[in-house]
Every structure is written in structure tokens, then in C-alpha cells.
Image (cartoon, rainbow, N blue to C red; front, side, top):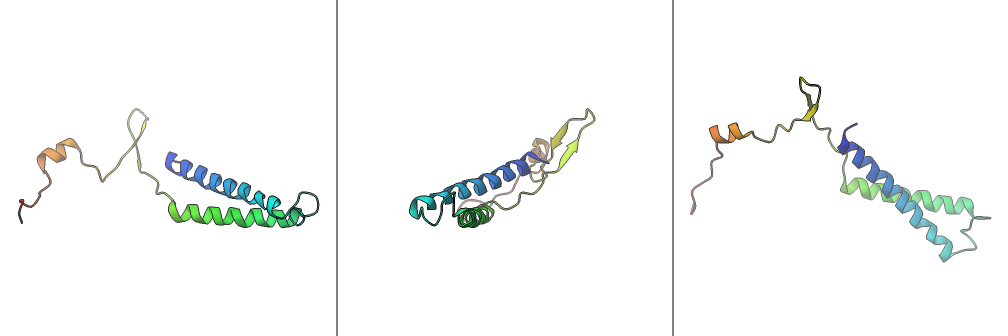
Length: 103
């Protein structure tokens, strides 16, 4: 698993835990209906729905990351290859062309 995907999964779990923990505040709002003795199922329902909403909001802002292509060198060290970046040799041999100023 790439570091990018691992970071994304940690954020997803953190969003679920944070939203679920925030839902426990309903105990303060209605302690007779949502409590740990008689209202466990109602409290659990609120926690689950809140966690689903938190996960949905996280997914809206942080879509599933794409895996970065790894290239294994001859010494066995994985290196991330980013094809969208140009090497220094490519920059010198074929510099980007910009339109003249004033056009």
C-alpha cells in the first residue's frame, strides 16, 4: 500500500471516529432517551449515522487517491516516477514556448 493511500485511509478512519464521538453529545441534549443504561440502541444509531455523514463529507473533499507508479531500480530501491515532471535535460533541449508579451 502506498503512503498516499495509507494517509487517505487514516483520514477516513479519523473522520468516522471524530463524527461518531461528536454524536455522543446527544446524551447532554436528551439524557432520558440517549443514555448508556436504557438508551444504548438509540445512542448507537445516532453514532452510526453521524459517522456515515462524517465519512461522506471526507470522501467529498478527499477522493480516493491514485497509486503513484513505482520504478524499481537495479539496487532494489523503489523510486516514485512522475511522468508529468520533466527532467533537466528535457527542459534544456525543448524549453516551453510562451507567446510574446502584448499579444
